[in-house]
Length: 190
Image (cartoon, rainbow, N blue to C red; front, side, top):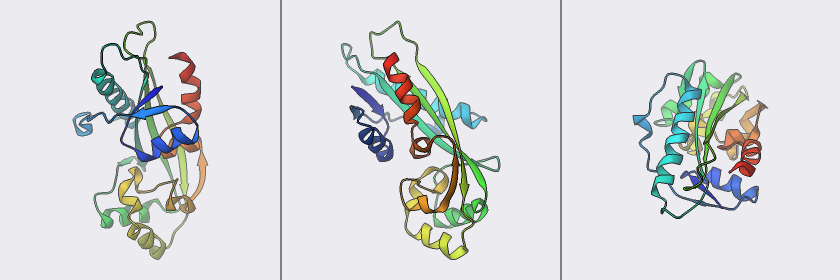
């Protein structure tokens, strides 16, 4: 059984929909303490830190593969995490509308304790996202829903934000929080 090192409900739902047996344990990693100027390296480092923290919480004889993930959205060279408030969410959407951005998700899959022959699997999957050219009213109504305040980049592909995404170039599930195709390739290895 896979152990997901994440508090993300979206990641949990993806694993459930894909019928991947799992349980969840939150890592407690201080994400602000991990820095890197390269967003793709940062999400890899964050994913690995989360997976290691959860693996270190396991009992000695517990052999369970641990998956850590972290996502960042990059628009026009700027990292967009979760908006701090509604005003910031509106401002970001006004910049993003009609344009492309990149959603990067770091993935780290660790073998269970006691499995010494397998190295950690570490990757960043990037999906390009094209946003609709929304009116100011559409942006304000979407932000008023509260959804953008809970998501990296200020949008949720699995929610109301799906109608504001015109096109994806890359992995769909990656935008929600983890790349199921990557995980499918990795799971037989741990």
